[in-house]
Amino acid sequence: MIRSTTRPRERLRPKGGMTSGLSAFFTIEYPTDKETLMLANAVFIATLIFLALIVWLSGELRFLAPWRSLIVRSYLPEISAYCALLFANILGLAIWIERKFFLRDTGRKLKHLDQEIHSGHNELSEEITTEFSE
Image (cartoon, rainbow, N blue to C red; front, side):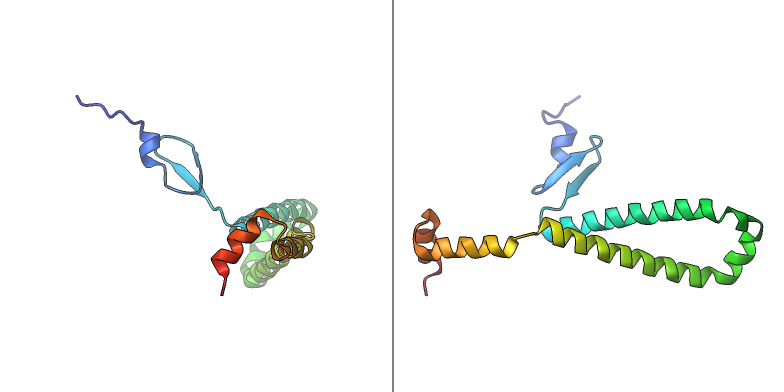
């Protein structure tokens, strides 16, 4: 019997990006760009809020249980459309909050970095001017 010198987990690991392996045959590759991470976090937060609202609302509307089949049969398209719009609004709110609080002062920081590069008082100034000189 011939045995491999590498473990199965090392052979299956994708190149680039962060990974997390649950077993030797299943790895998850996490995105590394900030836009995808921000959208993934917003979807996760919106899903948690939406599920919490559903659980709370199902407790509050317990008195409608005897008429559940009639309500679902008659109003399923309207209920699903309302739920989709509610989820979209919660997702938009989560994205807005992330941009408002986690990307605070980004423009000011970039402007400060741009001024440092163009003033010549930074180590990167020489590299950038040689790279992007026109």
